[in-house]
Amino acid sequence: MSALLFSIAIDWVTRQTTEDQNRGIRWDLFTNLEDLDFADDLALLSHTHHHIQEKTSRLNTYAKQIGLKISKKKTEVMILNVLNPQPVQIDETILPFTEKFTYLGRCVTPDGGAKDDIINRLEVLNDHVNKSGARTVILPSNSQSRK
Image 1 (cartoon, rainbow, N blue to C red):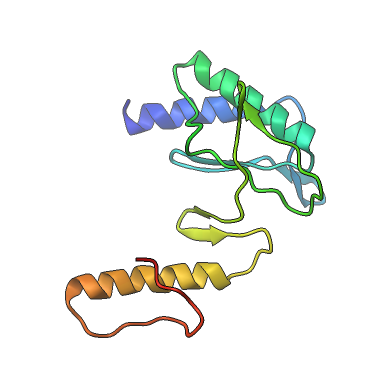
Image 2 (cartoon, rainbow, N blue to C red):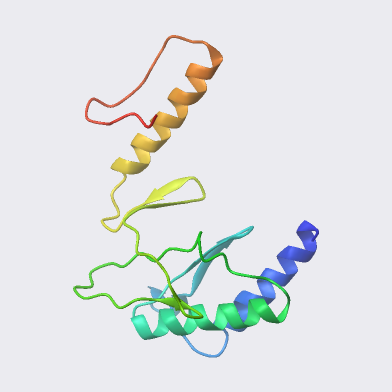
């Protein structure tokens, strides 16, 4: 599928998924943020389990209508400030919970901290430096290198 056609298709799917009611997070006094999307990366946002499950199911339904498929292996759920989280499912598959993921090159964690993101970026820089044959290595004193 061409990039333009895919962009049109995924835009239609996300609009159909979120159009009928607000299920997102409050962004400002008059706006709710329903999702974040870039190319083929999509993050659905919600305040309640019921709403995120509903959005996930709707996304799956509309994607199937145009021949797209959500990768159950690549899809994860991050929960913030919930004591007893309920599972989110696609069809009958329970999606795994995660404590960290990367979105558009940034590490996202439940505490909103930047520490993991900084460590990740320094390690990527080290990988590039090491591949170039340079001798300089940059690592914060408390990080572990990913080898």
